[in-house]
Every structure is written in structure tokens, then in C-alpha cells.
Length: 490
Image (cartoon, rainbow, N blue to C red):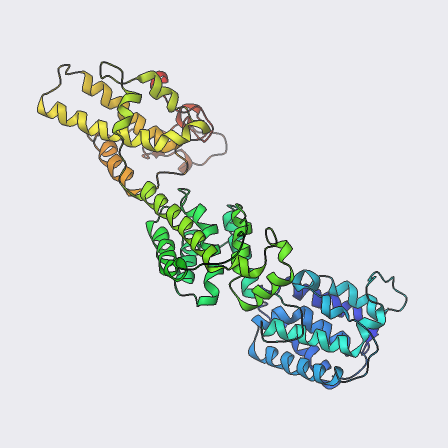
């Protein structure tokens, strides 16, 4: 077993790896901070020593935690890393390359715990075909990893290390990916998160705008899907695009063609976050084959191309706003749901009210049409214009139930104020039964052996009119995927 300062190395590495995996969880007892401070103190005591690689790699693993933890632990880690960089980088070396130059981001960080154990143990199997164990121990490589750890603490401020996304960018990508995959992270306010992307674009500096525009393009598809029921979300996105569109409107370029952007929202959102920061743009240039078709950076942020993207995104957002939150004309549905004699086509309506996925596309407009016609028939009845005095009553009953059932099968649920406002009078208007003046029925619990007299007392609790849980007649139409109500089965 390898020991460093009389401490088993595997125990140290295990604790560091745990902190590496849980850097975004706050340790209430300060355990994480103590581990960072201990590692920094051991490195600061001998920054140029031969075993400094142990403490440097340990701080590299824990740097994300130090970046979020107390000021003292971060300051101590930074000071120790700068001392190690200064002491190690001036020492002689005859290696052509070093591992740190190809250490790409947090994905490579995950391999450090296992690598550190193998670096320290001469008898351990070695699997890095590009660099021998000695190259990992080389002072120049130790200095390089010290700078990588400093780059985690101060994103984009350290030279001569591979670029990496900041912790904030990684977290933003994670949140957006989960949201757009319809499995948002716990505590995520979906509407607020999407709306904020419009604000980021609105206030973005010129060099950030292409990336932020890519993000808005990615979230716009979700925003106009109908699952967002707050019109201010679309307002914020539209406002952001309208703000930056003039910056690109007059742009020209000599590119033969522009990149083909991904139609997957998660991929598009990741691309946008990457292009929104200097470090991210360096990451893109280094690994551009990972993002779409591998177009050069200057084409991906080309102002003329951004004008196209902004125009298409703005058109889609405005169309979605009008469709979801604008007035809806349902007069064309008379031809679909009325017979030639002007009566309801019950069979057609019943088909559209079956609780199946294929009917979701009809639910919103059918419900709105039914609610509006319900009101018109009521006005006709009040004014005495109906030839058949019984017909409005019968048809209004069907229309009322139609409006109710469409709310059950609509997906996403009715997102607009207009249909809701039109449906509200419809569902409120039917007469309620007058309160009964009859005495509340009572019941007496039967006596059973072993029960007390108190348990047998007469109960004055009203009998519930609701059927028992699981009753088919009660739940029919309330569970997605069930047959649901239809006029023909009523």
C-alpha cells in the first residue's frame, strides 16, 4: 500500500474523489473545506518537492468544490497552486510532451483518482499509452496541472492550458438539457428558466450575442409548444431577439455556405452556452467536431448567419405567441360539427371526444367552439328566437359536456386566456341544486366484540356522495388513457 506522509494514499484519493463527485452539495460540517485546506497546506509546505504531484492532482480534483466553498479554503488552495507552478515549471525536463496538454475538461478529470494511484505505485498496471508514468511525475507536468486547477478557480484567466467550460456553463447546460428533455432538475422553475434566456440575450455583450441567440433558438421550440402557459415567457424571448436583430440585419459575408444547425433542442442549447463565453469559444475551436457539423467558429457566429437565425427564431416565436395567446377564430368549425340542418353532429363530436392521443390536436378548438356556441344558444333562448324550445336545452347540455371533456383530453392543457375566458361562463352557468333543508343523515357504527362504548356512538358526519376510491363510474374520463365520457355513452 502506497503511503504519503504516513497516510494511506488510497484513503486520501477516496475522500478526494467523493468531494469531486459531490462538489455541488454543501457539506454542513465543513468536511469538504477541511480536506481542501489540508491538501493545500501540505502542498504549500513543499511546493517543489518530488511528491508535490499528489497534492496538485488532489487540488485539481477538489477545485470545483473549492470554487464554491469558503473564501479561506479557496484562497489557501490558490496560493499553494501558484507556489507549486512557480517552483515546478523552472525545473529541467527532457520530455517532448506532457499529459496536461491533452487533458480536456471535466470528463478527463474523472480519470484522475485512478491515475493518481497508478502514478504513485510502480507495480501498478499502466494503461496510458501516450505518456509514461515518469511524464506524469515530471515537474513541468505538475506545474501544468497546477495551472489547470487555477483555471477551474478562475475560468478563462490562465494561459497555456487546454480550454474548459466554467462550472456555471456546465451547470447551465445540465439544467437546460434536463428541462428540454421534460425531466427538469428539482427546484427548476421551467417558465422562469426559459424566460431568463431572453433576458441574457437582451443584455448580452456583442461577442456573447451569437451564443445567446443560439440558446434562445433552442428553447423557443419548447416555449411555443403549449406547455408554457405564461405569455411573459414568449414576451421575454421575443424582446431579446428584437433587441439584437438590428445588429445583424445589415451584415454580409463571403461564406459559400453556412452551418446546418441541429434540430435537437438539447444539442442546440449546449452549442449556444459554449459559444457564449471566451473560454467556451476556445473549447469549440478545439473540439468543434463535437458540435454539429464541425463548422469553423467564424462561420458559426457569422453576423449574416445570425441574421438568418434571428429572423427565423423571431418568426416562430411571434407565430407561437399569436397561436397560443391571441384570439382564435372557431367559426370554420361550424362546417365540421354541425349537420346540414344546423343541429349538432353528435357522432362526429363523440369521435373527437374519445380520450385517445390522436384527439389531442382537436381538443382546444373543439372546447372553445362548444363554449361559444353554448353561450349563443343561451342568448337565443333568452330572446325567444328558437323554433324548437327544447332543442337549445338539449344541445346546450351536450355542448357543456363537450367543453368539459376537451379540458380532460387537451394536451398540453388549454394554455391561453382566451379559451379559458370563453369556457368559464359555460361551466359556471348550469343551475346548482338548492341546498337541502332535510336533516343530515346519521349512522351508528355496529358494535363488535372488543370495541368500546365510545366507538359505538352515533356519528353525525354526512354521508359522502363520492364513490369509493377506484370506482370505475367515478374515475372514468379522469385517468389519461381511459375511454372517457362521450355523448353516445352518457
